[in-house]
Length: 242
Image 1 (tube, one colour):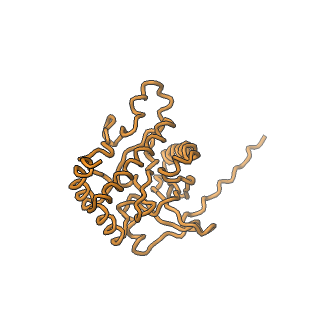
Image 2 (cartoon, helix red, strand yellow):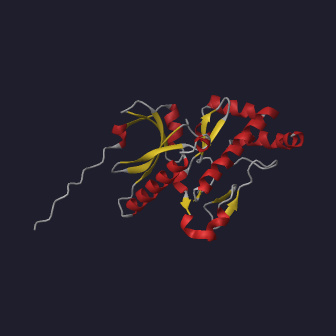
Image 3 (tube, rainbow, N blue to C red):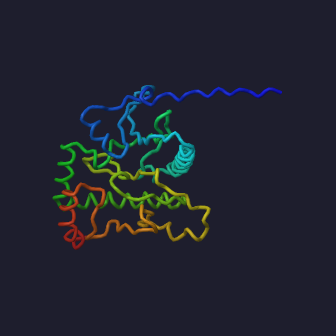
């Protein structure tokens, strides 16, 4: 019996599927840890793409499997309306022969990709008591996002400016993303239970680290330094007036 020949088709290049932004905003995204703003040529919608280069080795298949599993699990979490309000919507896994990553919707960037105008707006917000209260309410939303992930036995890979996304600047609306670093611990049994509490994350260093969320006196690691400075200057006053 002769062996059946399987035809391996090359993947459609991503730059044929999507029109990447290459203007001033595109340059800001280019330096933001593999993030791209791109328009899908099929439906004309604007999406965020998080992409990394393939190595050409067997590890590429492992990365694809991990990302696909994470997409499936996070989409299950997003079935809840309350989760969709605070978590960045992950659409699917995208790849070609050179790159692989995730496609997202529901945000227009991260704090590091803000335009000069948006950055100034955020800085002005942080100068007022009501503005600082708004920022901390958004920080609390991110903690709720962690809670949704933890309820699904997903531990976030770490909170930094690459995991926080801006759905809107005025009024401020932040969403939690960065799912590529998520770890599923459901199979660990009670041994992993200690990781599944809001505000406790797995970072790049060995062992869990505590992120002090929405606590007067803490800093926001994902905000521009000038914004965080104004925030810390007024947070004690805000805490005393609550």
